[in-house]
Image (cartoon, rainbow, N blue to C red; front, top):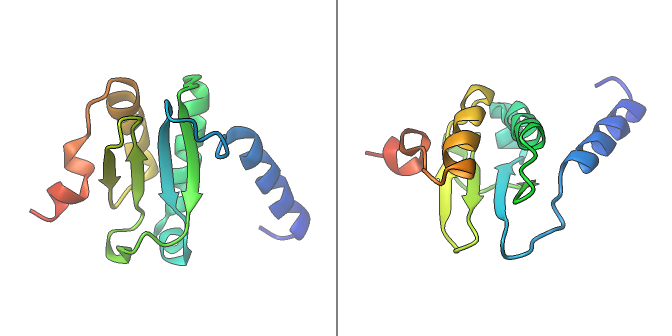
Length: 123
C-alpha cells in the first residue's frame, strides 16, 4: 500500500465482498483475527481467501468478517467458524492454502477439518 487512495480502494472492495452486518441466526459466520498479531502472522491473505472462495461458490448462507485480537496470539492466524446452532470451531495457524479445504469440508459439507483446529494442535 502506497497511498490513502489505495487503502480506500481496498476497503471498498472488501465492503462489497463481505456481508458482515447480516448476522441473522441462520448463517454461518467466519471471523478472521485481524489484530496486529494476526496481520503480522499472515491473516490478510487468509481473510482474502475466505471472501474470494465464499463469493466464488455463491455461498449466501456464509458471512465473512474480521475481529481484533482473539487472545491466542501464538496460534495466529486464527479463524473462528460459528454455525447457526451455536457451535464454534477455532482454526489456528491458518494459511491461504488451507482455506479451500475448510470452505469445502466445513462450510459446505458440515465436516470440521480437525487437523487445522486448536484442539488438534494442542494434543
